[in-house]
Image (cartoon, rainbow, N blue to C red; front, top):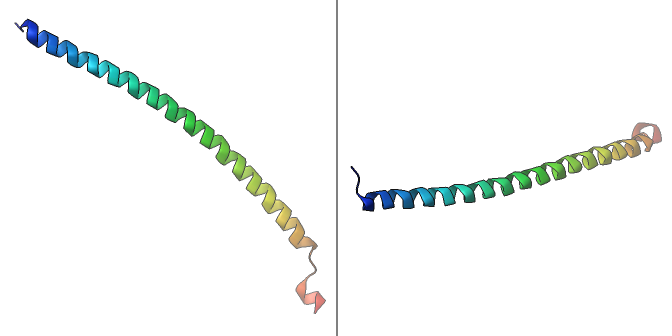
Length: 70
């Protein structure tokens, strides 16, 4: 049968593990939130890039054809 000292050591280890687990949960929640923010930012940038490409394509179509200008 384990002695009181061994039980105290086990209890201390369990407490440390619980504290570490809670820290990891908080860290994971923060990282998940950062991923969501970055995903939204990425999607916004992709949308802006697509709009800019469309504008550039429209401007290129308005330019005179080099062959017909020569």
